[in-house]
Image (cartoon, rainbow, N blue to C red; front, side, top):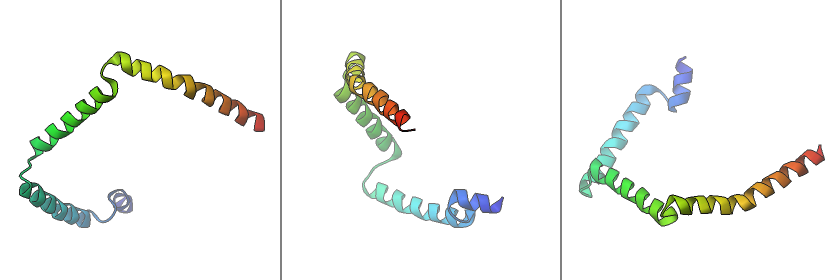
Length: 89
C-alpha cells in the first residue's frame, strides 16, 4: 500500500509535502511581487476563455458550421481508413 502511495505521489508523502510547501512559498512570493492575487488570476483566465470562445465561435451557429465543415472531411477519411485497415487483415 505504501509503495502505491509513493508511486501516485511521485515520492514519499513527507518529501512531496515539503516540495509543495517550498514551491508554494516561491510562487506566492513571485505573485506578491507582481501584485497579483488569486482573484486576478481567476478573472484573467475567465476573460481569456470568454475572449477565445467569442473569437473562435462568436455564436453557436458558427460553431455548428465549423463542425459540419470539418466533419465533411474527417468522417469520410475516417471511414476510408477503417475500410482499408479491415482489408489488410
